[in-house]
Length: 538
Image 1 (cartoon, one colour):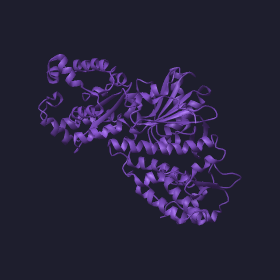
Image 2 (tube, rainbow, N blue to C red):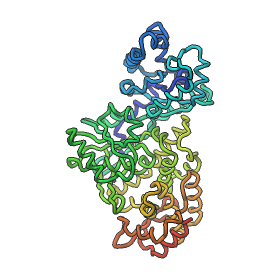
Image 3 (spheres, rainbow, N blue to C red):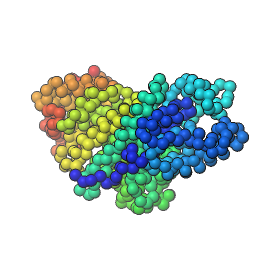
Image 4 (tube, rainbow, N blue to C red):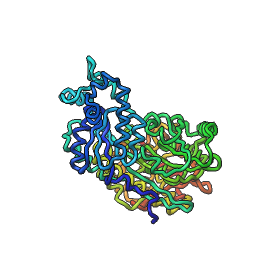
């Protein structure tokens, strides 16, 4: 095994900065002092530092000099503390919403955003007589808190979030110590053309440029939803090209749109394309990187669970046609993959569950304890916003990624073994097409996994206990285990006949005998296919 291509020492808890950001009254100063004490670090409160340097309160600075003067004071303080090590820094509520400040503090910093409900915040700031809050000097402070939180929500979401409601500051600080000691995991993917590295951790997005080590111009391709969340923190990294959100835009028309903007910008072969988003963004950006001027460097920054554990590894990129999914494609290996699990906190619960279908699939095809991790965890909710959960999620994602890495390394050009990663997918693609994409990909995969294990049982390859266990696991993460009755077996079979994995006119199914032992079967009769679909239908 090769050594990692990038040294993650800068992200260890040695000689680093811990930055606590978030709205006023979320506990940044109280928790920060306790965290610094636990780590043996120096503590700095930027507001207190500004007050002491100017011999006047923040309220007086706002009133006498104005907010813009105060923001410039913040920027000056940031330039000063950016060079410090082994410190915990509590920032003003807007300090880390300024891209200039984020960029200055990116090196050797772990940024955490503390959050609380408006009621909790109001109670705390009213009880805090040591600070006057100029932004709350209004007739209805709670209404103002709600308004400001709504304005800042998307910007705060670019950082890992820690809920402080109904929690003792000492308990929060102890949990954050665990987070600080949970360092990013570096996995090396060996490929005949060139090895590349997969880095998985929390709070990595501000470090994209350092992590990639990319030289030359950077263009970030993302969709409108992800740009709204992470565009402000990534604007200093490179030019952003926004594409429409949704699977329906995974088309040649969108690819042409990107080509046009690259050409207009004068982007050449020395540049780097970063895919920031889910699987659709990854496919479009990868296809563009593979074909624009015969190929430019490509970097994956997946922001959904399904793209982290599945589509960002292996180099497959594809575009849909009206006749079917992934009809046009090319292999394009990234030079690096950076998975920031903190981005998963912004996923809708159904999208997180969809990604869990691929995690569970990896647990079925690999001889590992991944399936046990899913069973023992609390994954029905995608983000409980506690420091310990961040570590658990990072470990789960890293192990699921390792499963795919092992299989892709053994079969980099999809000559044989790699096909087991399609367990359940022949059924899933048919479900998606017949339903006109009414179900998320992971939901369709979940139904497909049940169908594949049911077929394996009916053909005598698999014990029924595995099928029952699988259904319990899928239900535990809120995934469907039955094909809707309106999707008729005949229609699903007809859709399968257009599956691109057919060989010599025969459908190919991935079946399973036991955990870690999936295999290809291409001799399944239409009668067995129809009976299997009927057996798993509602």
